[in-house]
Amino acid sequence: MTGRRTRAALAVAAVGAMLTLAACGGSTSDDTADGGKNGGETRTVRDTMNGDISGVPVKPKRVVALWRTGSELADLGVKPVAALEGEFLKGEMDAGTYAKYEDIPTVGTFQGVDVEKVIKAKPDLIVGMDHGNIGIDYDELEDIAPTVILKIAEPPDVWKNYPQLADVVGKSTGFERDNAALSKKLAAIERRHGKRLRGAKAVHLSTDGGKNWISTKKSLAWERLDAAGFGYMDRYTKRPARYVEELASENIPDLNGADVLFYAVDLHGKKEPDVDKLLRSESFKRLPAVKAGNVFPLTSATIYTFAAANQQVTELTTAAQRYTSEGTSS
Image (cartoon, rainbow, N blue to C red; front, side, top):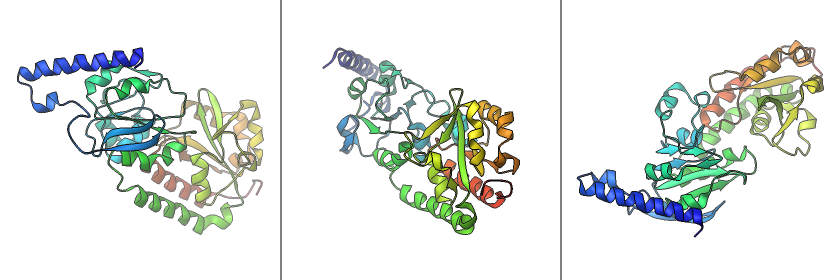
């Protein structure tokens, strides 16, 4: 056992002793239950980032949400007992859902967690995702409760992990149905408008860290656009290195060949300030697609929920109906 694991184990023991004393003082069984050791049915989850994890509750009741799991858990109706900062964002949820999740206690960030806060939450399961660069010591957490970390290579893999996350938290009931319905809606757009759209060269834009980004074929944005029948600029579909490619401000004229432009918004249709700045720039306004009126919002493809996906269907339907090839490269 490493030194850090020893610290975590000692902390668990200390809290356990305090809970025992509290029980002697008349606390209820709910107050003294040891998360992850309630005698319920368990199983082993295999091939996770941290190996095969045994002792995972079949029906977990006290989940701690680590990186990239918050919005999906909310979409599944699972309310964690604690989470990392930024896992439940107002811009990624409807008002009613956000009101239920905004006060969830936080236990740290993707750079590291406060072990004592995790212990205080008394989890019976800890879940997260990781691409190999997250600064969390999972060995420490495994001393507290079964810790299932799903592997991702790129952010779009978060969506691919949705059914596995649902299964891990005992909610694997509706993904196939909902995903099939989503695919059917996107296919309907292509069926109605595909002949006109497939030749249109689309581009999806977003901003992050003060930089402009274009989604590539590795992105979830591209997947949704493609499923709806839109074409895409060739440059961003041929062996892209990542799911996005940076677009320097001085290179905005490179988008002269685009027929239709999509920009990222949150679940409420709100643009990031840097997106608004991009759209108001003179170089952007001079693009043929902009002059033709072929600029449309698209809910961020890094909101990994069916609420966001279904909103994208509505936005793509509107874009397909309003798109015109006049004045563009088509």
